[in-house]
Image (cartoon, rainbow, N blue to C red):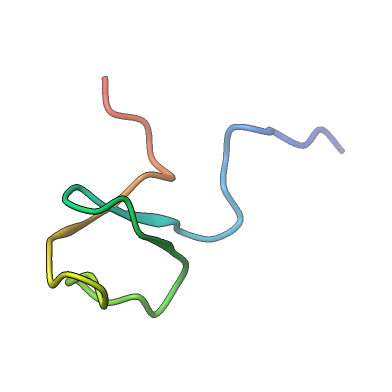
Length: 45
């Protein structure tokens, strides 16, 4: 079986304001600064 290293097992989120990173269950807002979290596990082209 071929494993694609670019397909994440689980979503990863990053805060655009402070750089906080979290996994599943992080919600939509950063727990540190209440900034918007974005899913960094998917490519943005």
